[in-house]
Length: 167
Image 1 (cartoon, rainbow, N blue to C red):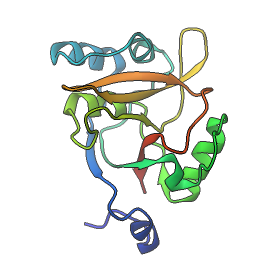
Image 2 (image 1 turned 90 degrees about the vertical axis):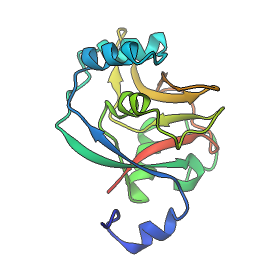
Image 3 (image 1 turned 60 degrees about the horizontal axis):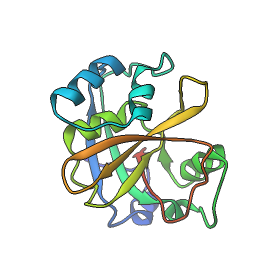
Image 4 (image 1 turned 135 degrees about the vertical axis):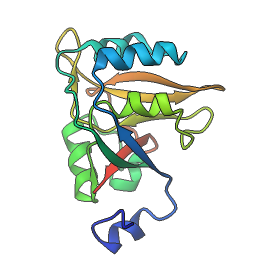
């Protein structure tokens, strides 16, 4: 099975961890319950994003994700604008993940997030309760994968790990 639109994308991200994720179409409230039943920790911000009316229920699909660092798609200095981050990622052949990808990866306990690693999931932002846009993040702190969140207005460091989709 070919994962990439062109060989140049495959070469560009050669050696980076890839993980297929089945997006189940579950709602934020369903995912919240399943995370609790699986004893997966999720932050207050992640809980807020799961409860947001802005979180769209995706259709069922398989998404190929890749773990890269922001510098891999052109972030060279702290970048405060999420639109610039996503534009640069898309320019390099990456795509936005469905909004629920972070929660689905946490439930899978995705093994490509190593101990002590934090990774943001590139997606369409989800409005928090104050209307501020947020994203899901993942952290492994010695046990299972934890679901966290971050505001899109925070600066992006070139060394940040990012989960993005592959087209």
